[in-house]
Image (cartoon, rainbow, N blue to C red; front, side, top):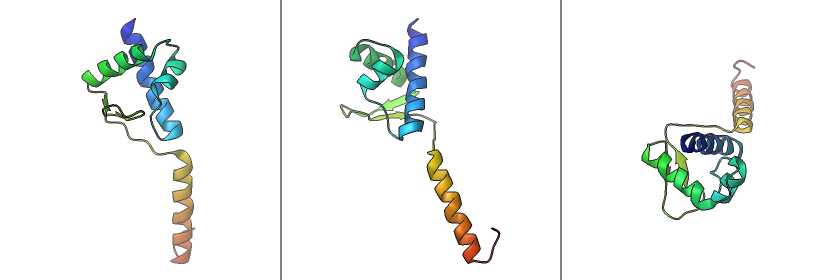
Length: 95
């Protein structure tokens, strides 16, 4: 049961970071995975850190990094592609 909840916490972290580009607070994780206590969320986060899946930094809220996971916000990709198209057009390249 605990590992199931821990996986939900891990999945929620990734989903949240993909959407907002920063980690959720302990309270947001509580709400997101249906836990009642921030201390239980912290316990799951500590276990995830022991497993090498995340890295937490001290007492900073939202200071959680998912190890080995890179993300790029989708609207940033669209902006980058638009900018590249403009550069290509200015240089006489492909449109």
